[in-house]
Length: 246
Ligand SMILES: [Zn+2]
Image (cartoon, rainbow, N blue to C red; front, side, top):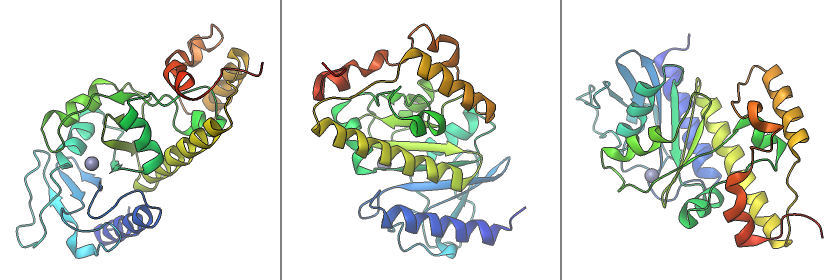
């Protein structure tokens, strides 16, 4: 088990990566790690994630009350979203929220992230649902995210806002953010080519079978052969290109 100081240092390191990759501007974004049943380490408000130091990381209980009174920094208001996720699923031990530009473009357009196109995104993200827009810092922000999740979900787009990724580890949650933004960047580049090729039901079935062998559950495997994947792609396809070569 890592010490609390090691976790704090890792949170600073991840903050630096998030800032360095341009996934947040100014003081945007926040991330947290659940360290026990009733304690969560979370990033403070009002600080660039690129310049975090371990002593600035705050501690909250599961009601969002800040425990470390001597810390001059205040916990992020969006920790309430993180706490909702920890309450919703016990396997979630870390949450990363940010506004990575390529992914956030889809949130601004309210276009669902298309599926059945990119094998990497399918294996590591799976279906990425879109939550309704809610005013940032409002309590029902977390409810809107939890409402669109299932047991397999690890990434949710937040309408007109950004993305939230979660995992059993901080590095795992961060990697999802990185994979999400890379995928969305590729989609936007592909859109410039005027057409996009979707994987066939058989190709998706084979891919999700491989995914299952990695131990990564994906409920879509059951309907893959029936062509159940990609029904939400219509908006993306309509906005940018033609479905297939013709
Ligand atoms: Zn935000």
